[in-house]
Length: 88
Image 1: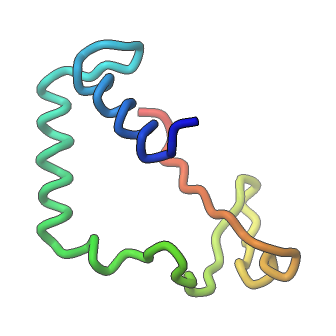
Image 2: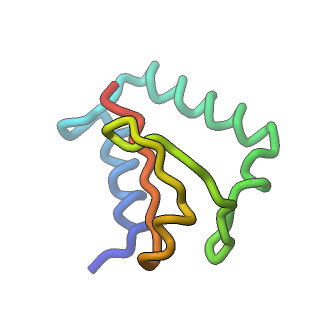
């Protein structure tokens, strides 16, 4: 089975080739590369959490707009947080 990085690399290659069901235009790909380079230039990458780091406690709204605290969820076991940006 391929690793997550291998799967992501294959997805990127297909996406940027103009093939496949989610192909992007060359203009969109260039815009994404430019935006990524601009973000990296800010140094944000170095401030991001790394594998094994502990995230600070936080409170977010769930899908029902109810506040949920990470500390409350952690009492039940490990916590996975997924950020979904929505459909473009």
